[in-house]
Image (cartoon, rainbow, N blue to C red; front, side, top):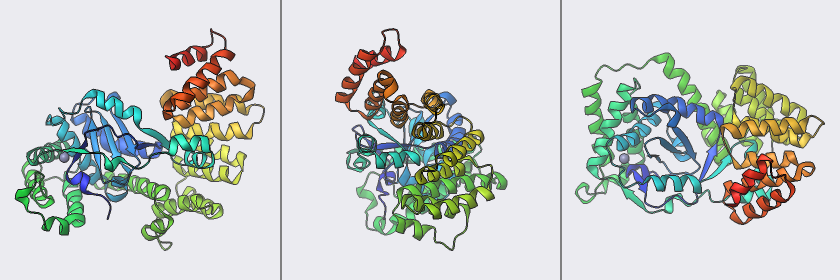
Length: 433
Ligand SMILES: [Zn+2]
């Protein structure tokens, strides 16, 4: 059984989450954004302030900080089977914000937490991290340890209020409030036997059964006739299933992937999870066959081309990899992780025009999302022929992975080689402050 107690107690961390890592993945971020955006709008959070963070941790958990930073755990995403139920978890967390239960969380702590979270990418990012010790050390370190932090839990009243405000939020956002019932039933299934041994008078937190009864009554009160839009539900369920399959494929053991997506299952999500697991396990032929089937079935899905690009890169087929990433970008628009992957392959293929294109791609990726892997790729694209800028990009990379010693070392080296008028000279100077 996974650690579901955290959401049950609706934990808040009393200390910054020092060693968690965040996952950057365009597909996952976009699907989550679609689900969270209507709730955030209903809660009067401006679109441009809303930010979704995907925490790489097995806990069944999610929380909101500062009112607009939504943290969703991969453990939660992998377990929760419907998009409505996931929305309910986020709506509950926003309910705590709206209810003013977050007074003890200071803005400073929020900023500190963002600073200390390490960022990693799925796909080609994981491969690079796995194959390169200097990158791996910074990017991959510390995926565990979140659960060991001490917690501040909310009171029983606060939990009930957050559920009620969450249901109201789902209704005013025209989303399916029955998602609350779905997620609480799932939690009850997982914790039922454990809870039956707890004396409700001895704890501060409401039991799942109590919460279930409460949300059922609330829904009957505020949305007695709610009927979901079947076609909307169907398409977003399909997208959500692909994201879950992707996370299982990347993060779970091969045996778990086979258990959840047995070879008899020929659905898109099963093919996706198995293709990714095959790629991770080095069965590149199997991975490619599965991915090509997905592309044949869904020629407009950019993320299947992204996966094909990852696989061809692993094969060492740079031309095919570049073609696949280019197609993915055509379909996805500005997608920073795919731009970074393309920059990586171009920098490795190293034909005459590749270097400039790789630098341009990495810079475009950094414009929408600064990430350590992208700085690392940028440094590589500059290479020996532009070692001042290479050193600056490495200093930025170390800055993002929290290696202060190397930040100083590389920023100083960059300044020695660059002209004072170079923008990278000035940026290196900022890192030395
Ligand atoms: Zn709560």
